Length: 69
Image (cartoon, rainbow, N blue to C red; front, side):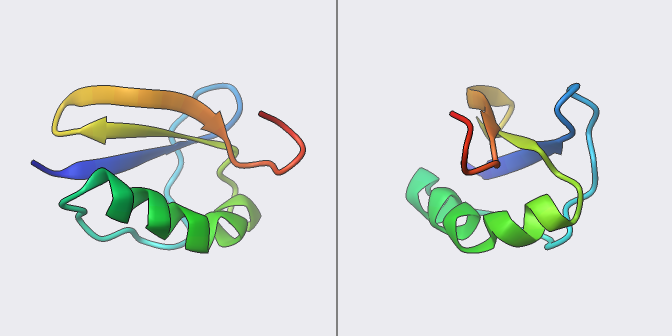
């Protein structure tokens, strides 16, 4: 199983992340990574993320902006 993030603008357009993620083997590792780098991702143009396990969407889109849910 591989956990991956999709990075998007607020309109759902995919963007390249400012920080390249590794391949994650657990959901916790993926979420911890996001917790470390979300500010850099926002500064690089990402507004929201979607978490997937292999090809299955787990959740999202989730805003990366601190004042939004």
